[in-house]
Image 1 (tube, rainbow, N blue to C red):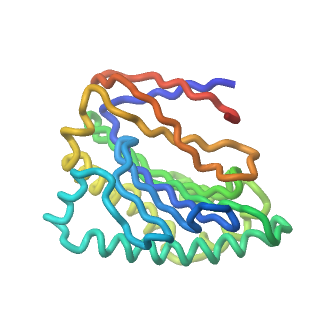
Image 2 (image 1 turned 180 degrees about the vertical axis):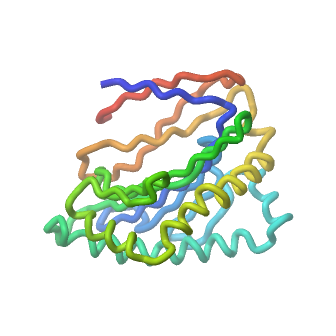
Amino acid sequence: MKKLYLYSLWIHSLKYFYTSSSQVPNFPEFVTVGLVDDVQMDYYDSKTMKAEAKQEWMNKVTADDPQYWERNTGNCLNAQQVFKVSIENIKPRFNQTGGAHIYQRMYGCEWDDETKEVNGFTQWGYDGEDFVSLDLKEEIFVAPVPQAVITKHKWENIQGYIAREKNYYTQICPEWLKKYVEYGRNSLMRTDRMFVKELFFKSCNHLCFLFFFCTVYLQCTKLILLFIDGKI
């Protein structure tokens, strides 16, 4: 089945992808990728153990925030440990012991610089299937599989957790997004550049975090991008 996705250049996005792997050959145990308007801006993995810029304009951030990269490296190190524990806790729920497995998180926000509307999102996946997501409007976690119900209840019972998450996605995330867009405005608004589009494929038992590269002629009008919903 083919799906149409509608994008507008007025809508800016900030997305982070965390990928924790277990027994996946030739791949770091933990990787994070940050994207602004679908352009990769930073990167961290468990081999280098260092957050680094992937766009020259991202180096401007240290002029306003000298500790930015050091702090981000620390955040990634903490997330790496949390994800390592999480993937081991999830395996038994699926009656798994060994083999290659992937635990992922995608989160971020969108900001419409025309209407000023802000939307946040966060979701987790395990072995290519939806695991948990946060419904910001209802302020609840959604568990689409029985194995995730434990996680849903655990997080919902942490006092103030959802409120802190909502504050991040509706206040903090959009402010950072605006900063990044300003830093990279000349590059991000080029009339011809490379887009990085993420594709998650269902029912796969290998690395499900894939990138789809496409060159798109950018205009300040709405673009319709066609993605194929299925396996490569």
